[in-house]
Length: 189
Image 1 (cartoon, helix red, strand yellow):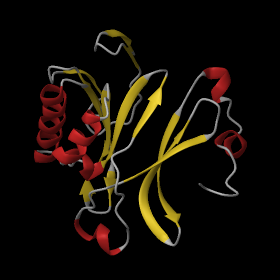
Image 2: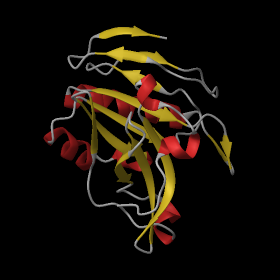
Image 3: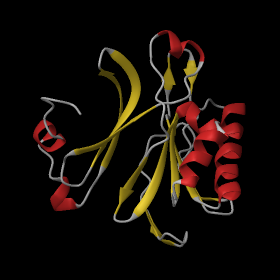
């Protein structure tokens, strides 16, 4: 897939296997002379297991990037997680394709703005959870990028569409949650 790329462990000197940690890292990625808005799924062994590319480009992105063509998921310990990069989360076709593949949860990486953007984010992810009977989470940028002021508020949603944990507006942070496939929240920090 990516010839000559070192493993995540080699690049960063981390020990994901010892700590049983997997990573999903967003980045632009050149594949066969095309550039994609992508995420690398790095498993707990420190190896790149999946490349996920944004399928639904927004605004001027199509001038610089190539859209992905497949709604992808990752599996961690039997837990099937559908991935959406930014505008993918707003497209029911994307979520439906993942649901048809049997996902237990959907995670969207996004850039929702303050004010109306925050309301849109909460509505979209609440609907994803309740309509598809899955857990969902949004990882939202929490600062200024160009002229865009993002709201933060990264959050987890239960299967009924209710937020059960979120970060503060415009604040960076880390949400840690242990959940079961049936949606039971075991603990969160």
